[in-house]
Image 1 (tube, protein in one colour):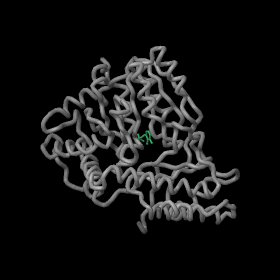
Image 2 (cartoon, rainbow, N blue to C red):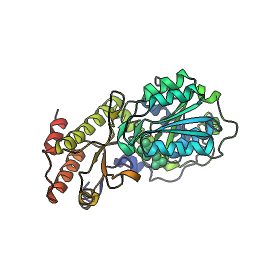
Image 3 (cartoon, rainbow, N blue to C red):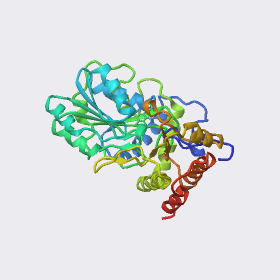
Image 4 (cartoon, rainbow, N blue to C red):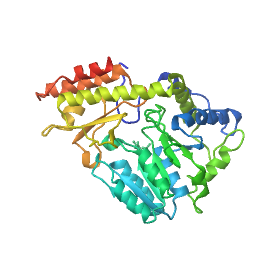
Length: 377
Ligand SMILES: *Cc1c(COP(=O)(O)O)cnc(C)c1O
């Protein structure tokens, strides 16, 4: 990396050279065999990574565009229940409130979701359930399988934000009965920011909203995607499609099982470091809720300023995330999405440990040694 910043954020993430190079070419016609083949390659490779045989559409827009397309296309005017234990869960319910009758079931950030309350709302006629699988803001992994099962039992549409799990952790869209699942390009897929891929079940198509958004209409996206060669309703972000195809090919070469195992190991190393240091993890886990395998968060000890740790590392060209909204200044989050491997984890953990040492804060134990223990297993 040398003169580059090592980006250890929960998106965007560092990209291999071949992905960057895929974007730097002359423009091509988006109504052409060449573009259609690119779109088809992306869909072919992403479907098994989503764990789905459903339709898949790629939208020009960040992950949020995928969430809004899902709500706007399938939940307009309906009773929508959004489970939230972090910023992105809350944001999902804000989108829902614009299109339908929205109810948010809120937990403390990073605390388990309230499944009993969800059940009550489903009994009382909720028609759509939204869930953030990997809640990045609180580094918690939510129980998508169990919630999908509940939604299906009450015949509700289940919309899953898998934006920071697909490509880095196990997602089984069809088995978990997710009618719509969404991934963002700049997270675990390690592609540039600006695309969202969305899978849609037949159940969802059967409940298509009458009045849908113009730009984010999934029905229209499907109509054009069914053309041969594949197309999009309006001019897509062609360079990003080319880069995403390259990113998908690299995932195919690595193998998704290997990639998931790598993400699990890298996050386990960061968790081990934080625990050895004596820091408090952000997520409150139980038998259903786990610590995220793609981003790891810890609370700062009392009296420690964000700038003392994150600021120090940034000066060394290592950048990771702080807290958002109510967690601002209180936590730090180290991402291990995409191509992050042992060297990047080691240097980041070492830098954090050095930052604490620099300010004379006495950590409980050697976090770097704990990380090495995991990485060398
Ligand atoms: C990053 C993220 C989003 C939003 O994605 P954008 O690409 O910024 O629109 C949504 N949900 C989760 C869980 C995320 O981490």
